[in-house]
Each structure stands twice: as structure tokens, then as C-alpha cells.
Image (tube, rainbow, N blue to C red; front, side, top):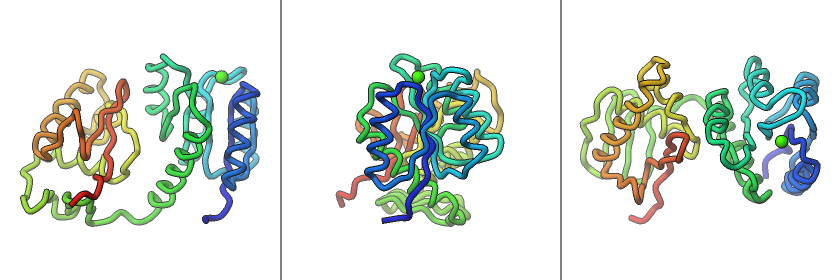
Length: 234
Ligand code: CA
């Protein structure tokens, strides 16, 4: 078991706040609760946190604003809580720098699992970047710009390589199309979001990855994509 992590929980609905706090504490974390956006910003300025659980719809200062304020000074992992149907908001949340999101109603168990995953990922992120990524049959030689699937070297374009590398560096992390445009193509132009879809389509074809039953690249509806480690079956 790792050391106790400090979590800032920002949620204005008392019943959700108390239930989530109880689950996180039971999982060994130390929880500070805030019931509105201003209280969250104040708490963040006073103390160090390892992770923030942030509701989007908040009194006083909205969640987007809290996220932006935190991101001005910190890259602490942030999980955003959104209500059903706020798809636009969800995308906006990821673009503001949230690392993950959960749609209400969610089970506190699911949140605890996401918190664990994000804390694990955060500890990996601070390690030096690796030269080689190995995921079952898929081998990525970062320095050599080579991708090998089983025994075959894939012929990827520069954009496809960057796209694969971006996704594969952090398995499980959801990237919005806009983020991928910035990281892969190097510009931020809304009209180019669809180009990411065609790069993903081409990359999937080369990886022999069926979008209806993916091994590597998963579509996150209304948001973007994520990479997963393939299940070990051979
Ligand atoms: Ca709320």
C-alpha cells in the first residue's frame, strides 16, 4: 500500500460529498471537502493536494474556473464530475486540463477505482520518459521512430506515429480530439478535429485494430480516444 494521499473533494451536493468522502477515506486517503468553487480555490491555496475531485456545476465559482485556476499553478491530477447530458461541458473539462471525468450518477466505488488509477498514473508520469513501450504484441521504439506489431514493422506516417505515441504513453488516459490536434498536428483549430478521426482510422487499419472490438485504441464517445494495454492472450 502506498502512502496516504491528500485529496481535495469539491462537490456542493451534501449527500454525494459525504458518501464520496467516506469511500475515499475508507480507501486510505485523507480528504478535504469543499462545498463551493471559492472554498475549493481557498483550500488549494492553503494546502498541497495529490488529487482533486471537482464537480463542474458549483455555486459561487464554477468548476471550469476552479480547474483553470488550479492549472495556472499545478499539474495535480483532476477528476471532473459532470451531470448526464453535459457532453459539451465534459469536453470543455478535458480541454481545461482535467485528466478524467465521471458522469453522474456514478457509484462511489467507480470513483475510488478512477482515483487509484489516476494516482498510479501520476506517479508513472513523473518518471523519465521511456525509450521503448511494450504492450503485448505491440512494440514502440520511441527514439528509432519504429513500431513493430508481432514481428512486422508498421509503416506509419509521422502524424500516425505521434498519435500512437501520445495515446500509448499514458494507457487509460482520455484525450479529447482537440488535445490530440494540438499534440499531434501542433495547431489548435477546431476544423481540424475531424482530421484526428481520419488519422485514428488509418492507424487502426495498420494496427489491425477493429473499432467495434478494439485491442488498443478505444473511442470515448463525444470526447475523443484512449489507448489501453491489450489483454494478454498469447
Ligand atoms: Ca453540482
